[in-house]
Image (tube, rainbow, N blue to C red; front, side, top):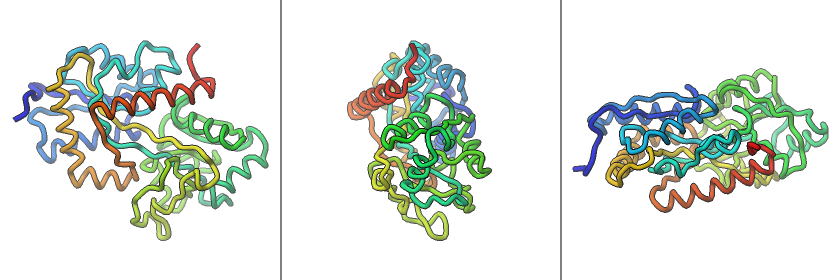
Amino acid sequence: MAAWEPTKPVEFVVPAGTGGGADQMARLIQGIIVKHKLMKESMIVVNKSGGAGAEGFMEVKESKGNPHKIIITLSNLFTTPMATGIPFGWKDMTPVTMMALDQFVLWVNADSPYKTAKDYIDATKAAGPSKMKMGGTGSKQEDQIITVGIEKATGTKFIYIPFKGGGDVAVQLVGGHINSTVNNPVEAVSQWRAGKLRPLCVFDDQRMPYKEKVTETMSWADIPTCKESGVPTDYVMLRGIFMAPGVTPDQVAYYNDLMKKVRETPDWKDFMEKGAFNTTAMNGPEFVKWLTTAEATHKQLMTEAGFIAK
């Protein structure tokens, strides 16, 4: 028997729009909880995407001691306060658990001549500065940070074009309106499967473990790392759960246990494979240490890119 459990419906805040990676994951978690009857009370997913997620973060920060509100996080946990100057940091909330890390892949249109990341970078260099268009979600957020990372690592310069969500970004690349993207697997997999997009490399320090074929010829595991492709850049994105400040250890333990049960379901494992996630999970001091390092890394990247609010 848990020492504490919810006594009314739990609000599950998504500091991003509908249809994106964080929203898909939150709705999947909610569905798993219902299907496997993991909670007595209901869980309601609420999108609060205003100000690049600031609206959601500030609401949780201001809900001190309220155990009936949790939030799923992505990289805007770090980037939004740095880019906007809002009075918020991850320490203003209570870390519960890392659910997974989301990958980023460099994609080009399948009709393009580029077969490797090196081919594409060489072509970008040859074209000259600000000729190739890199599409991404939002500005001064993870897609643009990775783009700046590629530029710094390879001496290239892209025109970065922001769109509203990862779905739009994939559609623009299929339509040939941009030259490349750094979409998450889950955002581009259907277009890859349909033969419209080509993955060039994954921004992680090792290849993805999923060996099942996605297309007739390739699995996620066949995509080389960007480092092995001559583009020495890596970046993974947190998918984590946090609570309001001032909650009790028993309340944190309840959600930790709940999310562990979610991760043990076949539904979750299937989602992890379909979206080619890095399945690292952690909590407690280990998670806090990871967050501290990730915040410092983002600060360095954001500073180098000139994205910090003055």
